[in-house]
Structure formats: structure tokens, C-alpha cells
Length: 368
Image 1: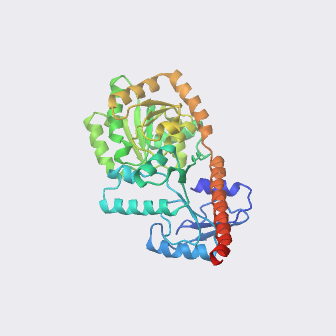
Image 2: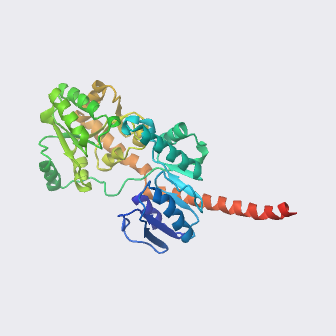
Image 3: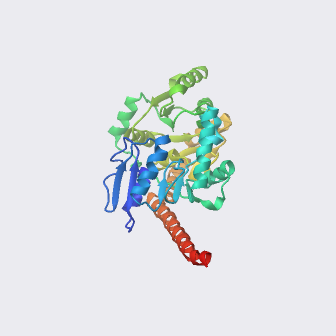
């Protein structure tokens, strides 16, 4: 959302903006343009206090339109609202939120947000279909606006930088990279089985898994040991963006075996760093990766492992995928997303004006 806010504020418009920031998020954006005010709320996201404080702020500042970047809207609002719902992962993947009570709350709040908002913005056509499937709104109420990729993600070609990140994480060989939090839908275990197949085919390299795996680390290490992969698996834990760019850029390929993604940013980040992608064909991933990924069934480790080996060892395929990746990125731009988001705001303004005019013109008829 930070990138979208900055892109919207960079456009020349006559709009006045109030950025309502959560606690601890002051100075989230890089400077404020004219006509922009920043206010740090004391109410945390998803709290009862938010339901009380946010309407007060909206009334006090005479806000014409609220855009909520998360799925919780105040039940009572003095103005129309637009809500962004990136995905419905907790409804589609119950194992991501094991608490039944948590899922009920999530479902209720998201359903209310969809009903209360005049427009819903989501990241992909796939997520739009899932929002309709699980929450039941009219599809015409939902606008698909593709996010962009941060300009920070670009190829790192400085040998010293690439060597430093390798040494920090003990990466001594060429490697396949996967990055992301540990969740069942991310399919880390399936990737380990596919990597076992890759080695059996004669693949020579390591598998680097970047990101906080936390409770999954012990399970992954046990599985790696059982498969005889322990010496080839590197778990980095959390890495900062500078290190992540270097890891993407230094990888021989990026593997995305995920079984559910509302969008799939990491695929585009890898492409932006000049890294070929082997990808699952599930959910939104084909929509996002387009023709710039090598697809394989991630539910069948042997098939996914074959794809890893083929791309890893075939320089012709790698070069073609890298070129297609850069071309595919042209479909995703924060500037374009900002223009499309402003168009939604303008549509809401026109609808509000039309409703007020209709109400005003109907009063004499009702009195007469």
C-alpha cells in the first residue's frame, strides 16, 4: 500500500488527501506533497477503538471518501468507502488460520466490508472470482487493479555484493531460490521432494529458502534429513530487501511451488532481478507470470523436479525466460495502478453527486 500511496500522491490532481496512519507508522511515506495531511491514529487495525475513532476523524476533517487498505470498515461512516481486499486466503485455506472462531470473525468482517463499501479493489482476476465465490457480492462492484513492483527490485551485478550475501548464509554453490513465509499452501515440503528429484537427475546445487519459516523450520530440517538433502538446504530466516535483491540476482532460478496466491509478488520480484522462474500453475500465478514462467504441477514433486532440472541446466531456456520476464513486468506499474485507483475515486465522487442531486430534486415532489 505504501507504493500505491506514493504513486497516487505523485500525480497532479486537485484532490486533498488525509493519510490516516496506524500507531507507529509515522513517516511511512517519503515526504508529503501539497494538499496532503498525515494523521497518526491511536487506534490499532481491527480494534474496537478503530470503530469509534475513525468515524470521528472522518467527520472532523469532512472527508468525502474513505479508502481502506484492509478489509475492516467502520460500521457507521459519514462518507462513502472503497475497500481493498487483496485475497481471501483465510477462507480458502483454512489451515492458514486454524482457529474456527478466528475464521468466523475474519469472514464476518470481510463480508461486512464488501457489503458496506461502494467499490472493492482487488489485485487479480483470480482474487475477484474468489471474493465473489466466498463473499457473494455482485462482480460488477469489484475493480481489478494490478499492483506494481517496487523499483528497488532490479538486477544486482556487483560481484562483491553477491559474494557477501553468499558468505553470510553459507551458500557455496549455484542455487535455486524460494522465498516466503511458512504456510502449508506455500508447499515447502513439496519443493523439498521436488529438489530431491532434481538432485537424482544429476542437478548440482543448493536450495536456498529465504524468509521466516519459524514453526516450520524443525519440520523442514527433519524432512531434508530424511531425504538426504541436509547438506544442500540453506534456511536464511528473515532477510532485508538489500539481501533479498542479491539472493534473487544470484540464483540460477527462482522456484514458486505455492498452491494458493492472491497475486504472487515474489514471482515478479524474481523477474525484475533477471532470474528465470519455475512456477506452479495454481490460482493467480499464471495470470501474474503470463508466458514468462516455466510451469509445472507443484502437487507432483517428480514433475516439478523435472522442470527445475530442465531450466537449471538449459541456458537457452533460462535466457528466454529472463527476456520474457522483463517484458512481462511492463504489465505491472504503480503509476498505472495509481491512475486506475484515482478513476475509482472519481467514479465514487460522481455517484455521490448524482445521489445528492436526486435527493434534492425529489424533495418538492414529496412535499407537493
